[in-house]
Image 1 (cartoon, rainbow, N blue to C red):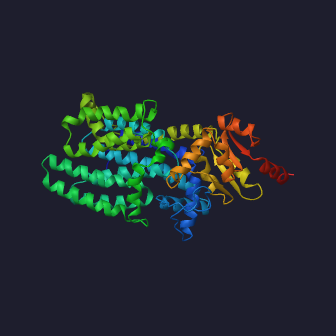
Image 2: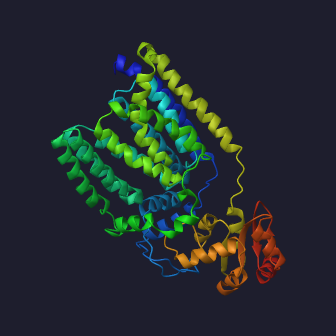
Image 3: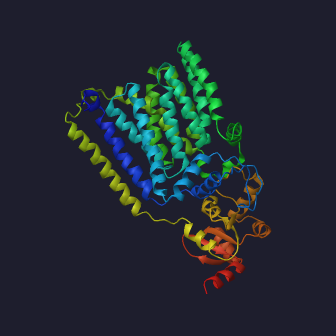
Length: 472
């Protein structure tokens, strides 16, 4: 029988917050329509990995870049997705991904406590971190990356030899996502911070972990190709076409209402913080503004310093009296989980799903194989998984040559020569925004509406004829 100690009572408020946010995340992951088109091609990849294959180049699923080199960095995530789907447990996979966000919040809470933050301050900071996650949350591999980063930072801040456990996290992280490449950078920064504050022994240990982290990043079936890929991606011209790689702006709610308050609090804490802790946080000051997808990562990294600053700014926290009843505390945690989880479930049930899955299923049902162009390339991910549709560009994005992206841009924006590009590749189907420029231009050229929805399926005249015969 565990003892209801004062320390446990002090953790009540962070526990309630984590329970409530956890309920919302799990409900959203389970019930919201998947908004990430990457799940389509990731399932396709997972099936091949489980079948003993490991593609290193694009195949016939793309008609614009077949044979282009490809680094399938998300192979483990994809394999687990395919395994879950094959056993009818896709819902369990979705729950597991949602739980990764909860794991990230839990690791953040423990790190805040280790830095000396008050439990009430930790609770407030957890809410800011969750807001920073909100725009990017979904059943997607990036959420797994959040948990990996949070676990790495927690292990890396453990005392002495326990820090070496961070290498196991890095190895697992690298097999899930290329964002693991940040681990050696953070370890090297920590080494510099330890040296600056006069901890020579700590600096040597951090430097050694940084070197070993490079080896851990290579502990995947991809070997050295993974870090080389990550370095190439930093300067890749395709970033221009990927929404999440655009620079962060004040119009991004996750930044303004989530990360920005954490940044302000971190700056207030900076004069009193250890050089090592600041050195770990500094790289995220750049990353957060370089790309909007880095906002959750920066929030996870900066949360402990922000919680310490909040603790010092609100002296009344010292008078916070923890609940003394164990039963009442447990009831509060369960109530928060159920209440906010139920609210999330209701919101998820009421969400409108205007994704192109139905249109892709209809196209796959037509006779023969088809060549699909998607106005938003992420829509094409599920088409890859059908086995009957090849695509112009899909959510893998990285392996498609710059010339293909230039042609994609010309078609999307109806620039001069777009018709020639469509004809040259033999495109016979398009997914477009209804009443958008491409929709109007295609209709003028004789394309037919096969499915009318906010995301329209257009087919060339020949495909429209086959569609009519297939339903007769």
